[in-house]
Length: 280
Image 1 (cartoon, helix red, strand yellow):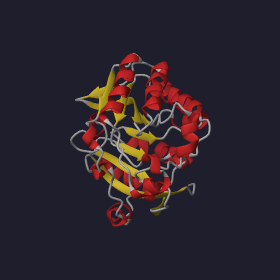
Image 2: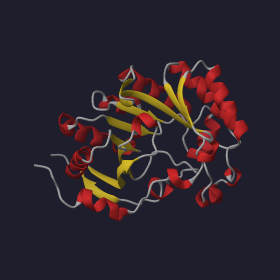
Image 3: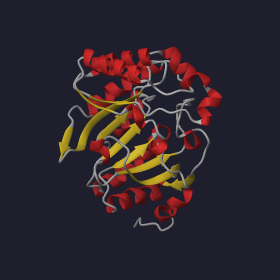
């Protein structure tokens, strides 16, 4: 038995993912604390950069996945897992034979291809962000040098592992959905991202998100982002999606930029998942 440790901030059914991920029973999310990116506009900053969370071991993570499955969720959704990838791959090797639902890897795509190869055969659905086609923005807002190349190679590897999108009753069972959050004042970056995605595979499904809203943390760190995405900016990105030859995707109403998309990180909600071990 190895001694991998993890810090998590939330476990439970989540209903604000894309429709084929959340469905009507929710996506069984496990939010990991910490993140390899340091995005100044992060709306989950208390856990991604603030360290909020509870420490667990790999047996507890194993049990959490089985508890979520017992609750009837559509999938096991690992959110910001990159910095725990070795431990996660070890747990998935153990638990995968007992899972009848897909495993989702939900990431910012600042990933080494060599690391992603550890997940081959263990992850059914990749849910990566493609944040930037402009490395100056990547450095300014996420402290992520060479993000464009690294993310492009990472998503290409994810597509190699899951080349076909499979659905059953409108719920995704295998495949990949690429996400992109449009930032106010930077629709030119977003338009370029659409073409980068299409160059990997124009058949990929793209989720174009307009849900950005400025929190106090964002205002303090990036005053130029203290505004919402305009309808014109968002429409320009949708036009670029079509111009790049992409045809499968999800869009949001511009009024979706509300706090409803931010999960509740009340750590007391973790109690029922980590107090009583199930592992035999």
